[in-house]
Every structure is written in C-alpha cells, then in structure tokens.
Image 1 (cartoon, each protein chain N blue to C red):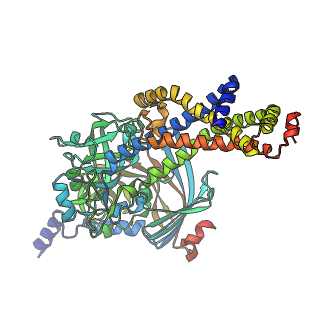
Image 2 (tube, each protein chain N blue to C red):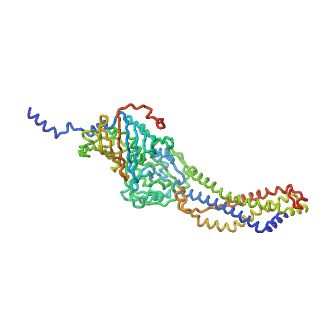
Image 3 (spheres, each protein chain N blue to C red):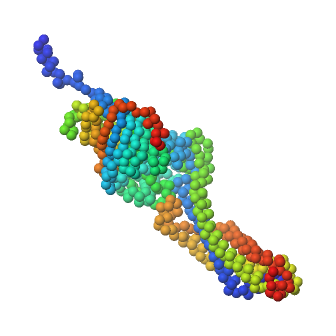
Length: 390
Length: 244
C-alpha cells in the first residue's frame, strides 16, 4: 500500500500540472464517447428509417431484379407465387412493381422509377394511403427531395411516359397527390409512387410484381422458384459498410486528441524523472528496489487516467445526456448527401462503449507512463543522490 | 356497245377498283426512303433553352440494321462515334477512350441533348413490317398534295402504338409524321421542310424533329450530302471501328 499512497500524494502535490493533464485527458474521454455515440446513433437511425420505409423485414426479389443494373429492370417482373400471395393477402407483405419511366416536369425530361404499391399496405412507412382516390386521374406520391429537384408540388399534373410489358410506349397525366417527407433517399430520389392496380393495367402486368417486402421481424424465408430471398443483413450491407467507413474516418479525430493527451502525460513523466532524481536516490537508499520505483512512477501516470475519468464524468455525463435528449443538429445540406438521417442525430451511448473507452484510455495512459520510467532501471543510488542520471 | 363504253368511262371515277391502298403507299414510302446502303453528311441543330448548337456528323448506313456515325464538329464532340447493329447500340467517346453500350433506360436518353432518343436511332424504319396503314384523308401540306395515313401497330411490341403520316402523292416521301402513345397522346413529331432530287431520288434534306412532351423548338436535321449504293467495307460496322 506504500506505492499507491506515495503515488497519490505525489500526484496531488504536483498541483496545476496534474490538473492540466487530467483535463486534457478528460477531453479525450468525452470526445471518444461522444463521437462513437454519434456514429452509433447515426447507424441506428439509418437502419431503422431504411428498414421502416424500404426493406421491411426482408425482401423477395424477382430473379431478374438487380437494383444496381438498370439494363435488366425491364425484365424484372413476375406473377406473385401463391406462398407470397397469401402473405400479401394477410397484409404481412407488400408487392412492389418497378418500371422505368420518363417524366416531363416544366417541359424538361427526367428518367424516373415508376413504383406501384397497394395504397392500403401497412408494411412500409410510405404514406401510400394518399394514393387511394376515386378520381380517374392516376394519383402519384413523390418524396420531398424529388419535389425539390423537379419543382413539383401537391396538386400538380405531370406527363409520364413508360413502356408496357411489350415495350410499347404509353403516356398519361398523373396528379401529385402528396409530397411525403422522408429521410430515406432510396424511396425518394427520382421515384414516382402510384397505385399498384393502376400500374398493372398501365403496363399490362396483371398480378405481377418486381419485389415483395416482408413485414418487420418476419420469419418467412422459404425458398421459392424464380424469387430470391434477401435478408436484412444482405439488404443493409451497403449501409453498414458506409457506417464503418464513417466510423473509421471519425476515429482519426479522437485518435489525434488522445495522442495529444498522451504526449502531455509522457512529457510529465520525463520531467518528473528528471526533476526527482534526488527523491529517487533517497527512496533507493531507504531500501526501495528499482522495480518498485518504476511501479511508483507508472502508477502516478496511470492515476491521471483515473482522475480524468472522474472529471470527464463530472461534466461529460450532463453534456452527453443533453445531446442524447435534444439531438445533434445537422446542416441543411446534409440532407442531399443521400443518408437516411433527418435533421438531427440522436447519439446512442452503450455501457460497452463507456467501459471500453475507459479501459482503452487507462491502458494507453499506463503504457505511456511506463515508457519513460525504464530509465530508472539503470539508475545508481549514489548518482541519484548527487542528482545525476546516467 | 358504245353505251357500255360510255357508262364504263363515267363510272370509273366513282369506284376504287384501281385505288391505291394505305399499305401499298407505305411500301412505296419504304422503298423511297430506304436503300441498300448510303453515306451521308448531315447537320443537327439542337435548339435548347440557352441557345442552339450545331453538330455535324458523317453516317454510313447498310440496310436497316447497320449504321455507323462519326461526329465531325464541334471540337468538343469531334471523334464521338455511334454504332448500331440491329437493336444494339454502342457509343465511343474520345475523351474517355471508352466504348459504352447503350441499353435499357439509357436508350431513352436524348442523343447529344437533341429531341431524338437513342431508341429513335435503333428502330427499324421499314414501316410496312410494323404497321397496317389506312388512308384517312387527303390534304395539302406545304403546298404538296398528300395522303394522310393512319398507321396501327401490327404487333403489341412496337415502340409507337400508332402513327399518322402525310405522304407526298407524287414523290412518296412522308412530309409530316406524328407518333403516338397507346393512350393516343402525341409523343413525337417530324416535319420535312425541304425535299431535293439527289443521287437519282427524292431525299428529305431539311426536317424538324420534336419531342412533343418537352418544351423547346425541336431539333433540325439537315442533310448536306448523300451518296446511295456505295461500297462500304464491312469493318466499318464493327466495334473495333469505334476506336479507330
């Protein structure tokens, strides 16, 4: 118990120098937890919003469908098989028919994806009920990004040109019945949602769909001929890869912070060893071994991390709690980056994150504290007493 | 006997026993506008919102299935090439030194910002193979007597479900054309403003192509020179020729 007592006394005695190191290190604690929490929150928000609006609990794709290959989209449709039709009838799945089309907003032309969805569906968070109208005109739903890029607003009529299943052109007017506010660009950018039954008539594709979206937490994953099951892990793969890239990019920031804090600890240790040679000689003369001395100086350095954790908790807990409650506002332009984020990110801190960060800083600080003390191993007590360091 | 001959002469103008049918006119139109092969130098004037651009191109055509186009000017487009083999289309850009196959939705993109889409390039111009024609009127257009033909697609997989064409009665050249969607909506129009006698046949040399769903003045197409039935080497219609 002598070494911890001595270590605490020395740390306390160093006064302002200790507290400067502790405060600098506490910034690292808070920054790491805040940034990681921010990325966790971002990831959770993106996953939830995308699953709610786009992926549901998994999807069945018609075997020709490949979202990254527009050349095959014309062939990507088929009659819904009985197994999936039963789920659709039970409102446990929603069929979506996708075709390419061209719209002519303000006399310009723009290629879009025409998506047919049953208005009464409850599987996805797309506000498809707005498509349920008795009007003759084809009702259409667009997202806020699409509305912004095309200059369309609710009540506007727009000409749409598409090809039917045989490849023959057809064109008609559609009415924008709703501009939906959505965080998910994948259901918004260059997309026009119309009632599935109307789209089937327009394209001469009765009872057909391009994909079937299952309800959330659906356990249905039966193998079906000409339809491929895609689970959420597969569907979210790109999103997770994006999150990982962002997370790695963000970690550079806090690694720089941590490096600066460690530099301060390292300098303090070097200075201590240089200035406290006589003290070391005295302790050795009184019978303290070199290894005990190394332990003492290493512990002094490590205590900085413990104190930093306490200080970080003092101001970090209220600060991070406030941010988690009120969210972190994103600049306006972020919306156009293509992330399903919305206007604010709500950080998510887990126990693992807090404990992991504390252990990381503690271990790194201990190692950094230990490195300069290796010089003590070569110290001769007589030289130390005279203030020499060999 | 004299009475019989007299009656026969009187009746002929009111019968259609020798009248030409829509499909016969259409066949003659195809025969007039298509040839075994041709080499043409043409200008495309694209009237956009911010002004007009002129693109000059040389085109080699063999039958209705093979064509090769090389853009000659402006400097920015010079060297860009386009190859059509049946219903497949490739473009080559000298800036990127890459050949791209145009397919799917890209076929609907406009060529160089004009009113023509890539699929307008790829369609089979032998109308008699695709449509049934019916004479619906006889009208004057650009001071020329014309038959107005209504074309209805023979099959369900034809790009334009119906067309209306104004055919010059004397020269069998379509002077105006309108292309419709299944719903009856007018999609595209073509007006031929000038026809000239070149290389022993009547050739439309100035025309205006317009996407009727878009705003704008359309795209003018001017044929500067044309040669028919010339010998075009086979290698011209290969993908390797795009990079030459």
